[in-house]
Amino acid sequence: MDVVKKDQTLLDAFKTADSVLGQGVQSISDLITIPGLVNVDFADVKSVMTNAGSALMGVGRSSGEKRAIIAANAAISSPLLEVSIDGAKGILFNIAGGENLTLSEINEASSIITQSADPDANIIFGTTIREDLGEDIQISVIAAGFDSIRHFNSTAPSNTYFKPIVSESTSAPQDSTSEIVDPPKSSPAGKYKLQHDEVSIEDDLDIPTFLRNKF
Image (cartoon, rainbow, N blue to C red; front, side):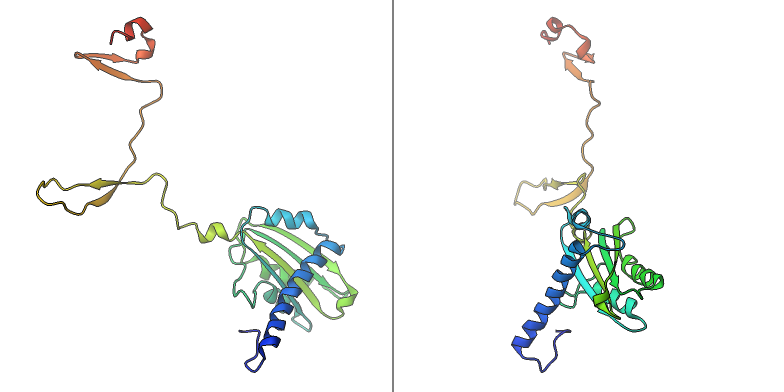
């Protein structure tokens, strides 16, 4: 609702949503097909998105004195999905502008985009000089790898199991409860202990077969 005016008709609202999504798709298409000064291609897109789960695709465009900052903030925040790139483990972004694009603007935009990512994120950067943008700067972002963070605390530790405690009373059945106990420790590999008629045999693997059969 943030991108739709209160007095906007239903059809116009749908057109606005289509426009936002269309800009995102177009920006990714341009990123792959238009050669850049610092080039990114389909292989880079694939490396960020492969086995990464959910992905965020965004584009921001602005002009004026703070165009890089405004465009970067718009690119990392989807007005339709209301999500951000916080904690992303893979980010690809491309900064496009005319010949007046400055290194300072690139640094400003890059800092905004990367500061919200995971510390160990795979970050791929590209830049393109496009005269058709005029005084505008356009920033395209693909971010992925959110699922592992969202579900990290949803599973119990694998080395914990529950042991039921049953009441010793034999009268009426009672509800059983559970307590957390440590998993049983396994015996060291290769060591066995057999007992028969008060005779203890340690490490029976060293005993001949015909003697072991007697026990």
